[in-house]
Length: 143
Image 1 (cartoon, rainbow, N blue to C red):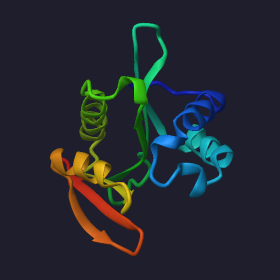
Image 2: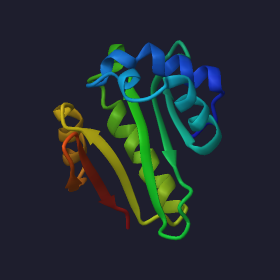
Image 3: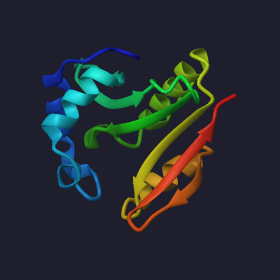
Image 4: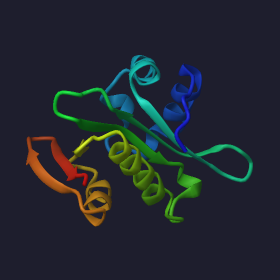
């Protein structure tokens, strides 16, 4: 479900799930600044568990209206909620939102050390379009 979140909610979720990333997100960005950027510039997609706690969270930039390309900057399923298809469900919601808003492509970046994430996207029909020393650049056309 698309649902705008506050800075504190975003920041706390990212800190709570920081260790699930390879490398840790805190090694790549200042989480406080990143959470503020997500609060102000990204669309937020969330799934909740039966206790109304966030099970999965994604943030996507839908602000390139010249090319109509969206950028998935953050997606995570809480470690205790993994293996239930929540990542796939969240990705479907993001793609549906992109379609409905006339975006034609969804791009993202994955660390080369995070092969499980790369595999997840490839299973969802994303393609590696480029790479550098540390990252894969991945994309999916939206029709």
